[in-house]
Length: 188
Image (tube, rainbow, N blue to C red):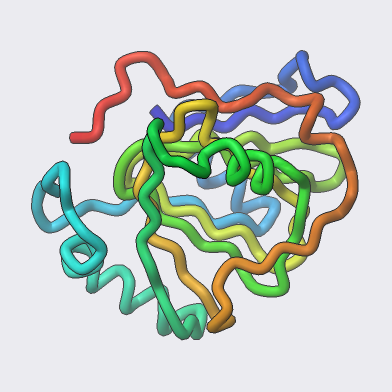
């Protein structure tokens, strides 16, 4: 289940608010210029779907987003608990950073936690299968897929180099809860 937990940056163990309804999450995030929505697939995704199959399933939505944001490329990233680089990749994404382009992701399978640092608050967005999130240029954030990552996401890029982060050097992320998959999470 998708969820938004809001914290004061000074109180990482005491949530100010927890929202579970998609419309409430989208409305609260829209107030800080974050786009959050749910997409539907044209058909069920096979367990071993490759990039081409996943892109074909969401082609209409991908085309709409690419035109709307003027993106130049799209790819699909798969992370599994047995990925050989899961530890260094997790560490890289857990450091607070910003981008010079919008960071736009669609969760095809699995989930992860986007933590957004806005106006002395942390907006922890637990993204799950079929969730779309767009983090605007310059918003401080970090991402965690947990110790045993299990997700497939469609990523959109303006820069041909792909994912480029500018780290803030702030260690705030170390103080906040990490991602744990919700109980009963399925990829159907």
